[in-house]
Image 1 (tube, rainbow, N blue to C red):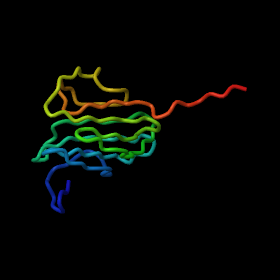
Image 2 (image 1 turned 180 degrees about the vertical axis):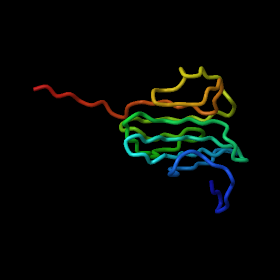
Image 3 (image 1 turned 120 degrees about the vertical axis):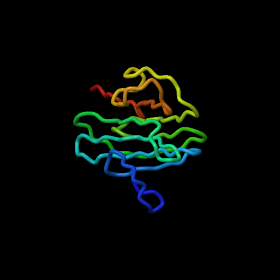
Image 4 (image 1 turned 90 degrees about the horizontal axis):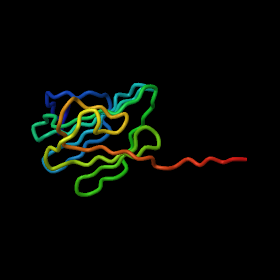
Length: 134
């Protein structure tokens, strides 16, 4: 990882830096792996010493994802697209919050086994396809 033109000695999974945002003394980093038909988006929340305080990965077999940062909603929310017509909302918490491992995140989101998180991910379709009958 390079920050301010200097090597930090830290390594994150992924190949392409999609976005890096500062929130207070934290940094939110979005990295994709650039594997055709099995794209993965890695999301990291780093502290001021670049230690990972929370992370999640989004992927699906045979799924192509394109990361598009749509909006930064002050004070603590980011909205983006990944995996087609799915709007993702990421909300950063001031402190650790409780979560049920495995059951707390939307389909396609993976996290390390942990009972706490610093950001929450929610998903919603961006449009409802119309069915025409003839």
